[in-house]
Each structure stands twice: as structure tokens, then as C-alpha cells.
Amino acid sequence: MDGSHKARRALPTLLDWPVVRQVRDGDFLGRGRAVTSPTTRSQTARTKTADRVVQSICPYCAVGCGQKIFVKDEKIVQIEGDPDSPISRGRLCPKGSASEQLVNSPVRQTQVLYRAPHATEWTTLDLDQATDMIADRFLETRRRTWQDTDEDGRLLARTMGIASLGGATLDNEENYLIKKLFTAAGAIQIENQARI
Image 1 (cartoon, helix red, strand yellow):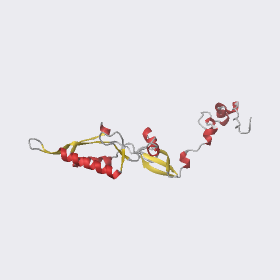
Image 2 (cartoon, helix red, strand yellow):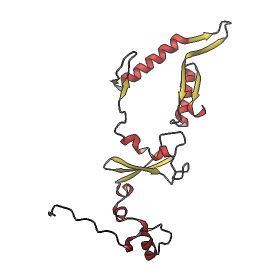
Image 3 (spheres, helix red, strand yellow):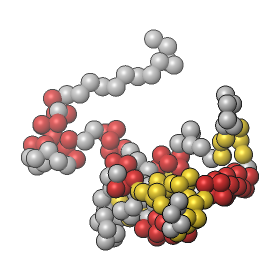
Image 4 (cartoon, one colour):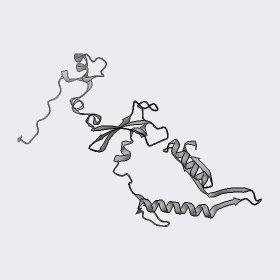
């Protein structure tokens, strides 16, 4: 055996067995140090090494659960429920618990993608250009489908060419403003995913 070969770890003895450690350490319920491995004891939680903790709100639904965001080297390393939040009291649903992936996922979309009619490929658009395209199409659809009156001359002042389906990722204030916008634009088909 040459010197480059790593020495094998010593095999555990009877005294290393977890049940023996439990009795020896007085950890009869097996909830303490006696049942953790040396590897587990040597690891440090990401929350302990964070540079700072920022309070935020989960972006996934309208509940508004509080989050504690742990940042290290200007990168989010962990997100947990905020026990100081009167709404969630430190709890997060599975989606909220996994929200760290929202910002750190390598497949996260960070650009506006557009696929023209009948095209087979996506193209990248500037945000201002995409916003202008949406506004132009919204106004053109409203102009083309506007109904002032019905066939009997009764006032309608509506468009049937525009509808809104809101999402529960928006908070109450955002949904209120969207409702006001679409009502002012004459749309009558306004719904929210949370009610469907």
C-alpha cells in the first residue's frame, strides 16, 4: 500500500452505537447529541453564517406570509418563516419554503421573451419595447371592440374584447388597482384565479 492511499476510517465499536450513546449520555428519548453523527455535528447551518437577515413577504400568494431572508456575500442563502409576522407566525407553506429557488434557480427567466405569430423561435425583447407592444394591443383591441350602445339605444360603454384574469400572487392593493384599470377601460369580464 503506498502513502497516497487514504487511511480507512476505524470501524465503529459497540460503544459507538446510538442506543449505547443514548444511555451513556442520558439522552433516553434519542433527541439530542447522542443520535447525531460526527458529520452532522461538524456542519454549520446557512443561517448561522449569513452576513445579514432581511425581513420580507412571500411573493407566491395574497396571504402575505412573513419571511426572513438570510444573505451572505450579497446572495440569498436561505429563506425561513418570520416568527414576528402576525399573519404567518413563522410558518410557510411548501411553496413559500422553497422560494429561495425563485431567485437562485439557474433556469430563472430574467429577460422578456416573445414569439411572433407563426414563429418557431423565441426572441428577446427590451422591457420598454414589450410594454409598448402590450399597451398598443390593449388600446387597439379596446378601440376595435368598443360598444357605446346596444341595438335599442341603451348605454353600454363597454368592450367585450378585453378580459382580466388576476392571480393570487398579487396582494389586495394590486388587485384593487387592476380592477379599477380594467373597469375604467370598459372591460366587464374581470375575474381572479383565487375565486375560480
